[in-house]
Length: 169
Image (cartoon, rainbow, N blue to C red):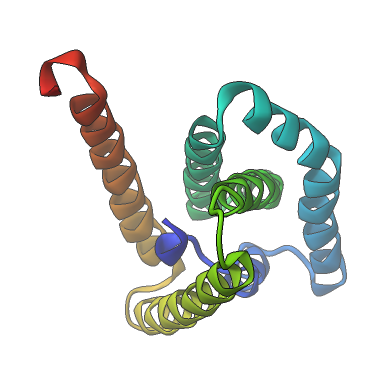
């Protein structure tokens, strides 16, 4: 899902394209990071209570909402996209770290590989996003990514139900 989530750089470009003045753009980033700070404890506790997978799925859904809000092109909705990006970041990071923490051996190596792969995926996604943005425009790129994003989430949810159902045993 991280591959289809646009970076904060593209979010700022989109905000500026919709007419938000440059001097207000840093406040959008602040909105996302304040959201992360306010929800960090809650999402960690939720992962302890409900499990990391449910928190991860909720975070991925928040990322989808962020993409939809960005694609709207309306000032207020684009600004809200940064809040949902903050929710996406804090929930998915907490859930993934919790999942990685379950490994008994070589935790440092596992974290290292995770962040290396994540960096490669993010860089590749940024290149693809930039290329599509250039050729199709911001709205079309965001819509394409949103559709792919929700399809991946739906496939994941369906496959989880199928493999976790009593009939699959």
